[in-house]
Image (spheres, rainbow, N blue to C red):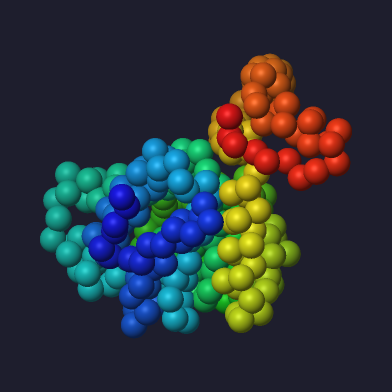
Length: 265
């Protein structure tokens, strides 16, 4: 049973919804929230009833990043070992998100700033409300734009030039601009966000789970490989999947002119 205490958690129709729940601070992150996000994404990898995940927030913000008082003030009193312990924990959140063999949808309901923007970035798909503000603002607090994998992931989604601009300047952009950059997959009115994210998550949850898991794994692996290695990797992956029940089920459903019923096996 997955029961985090620092944010809301719900399961329905094969979808787990994680809702950051500190609306008074635009869902800023504390040490506890970071740790529970890390542990929850790790636990979801072993939790078979869940086949897709939605990450969202309550109120006007998706996530405004690390809490100024609960985290930043405390970090100023830590030694080098303590600081590295913290930064490694934050990176482990992204590590567990990317290693989760299930799709993650960020339903960005408002401001996504700092670590909040990276949480959306580390998700597989991003749906955002109209006019939401996005900012990778680490440089504005004297830190590198390279945080929690941002300098690795962002150039691969929006290109090196645009990523350099966003990470070095720390400027705020809207969801509409983020969509033009390729960072956001879809922009919707606020009243439609939850339904759109749930519908997409349920669609993925009904899909061939093993094939989706290996698609995500392959995308991760081929972020830093050469073409010939990628081709061999994909050949082996497809050959493996051609032996699965889901591959046979897709064929039999096509012949019978009925929807496929995938089991992830």
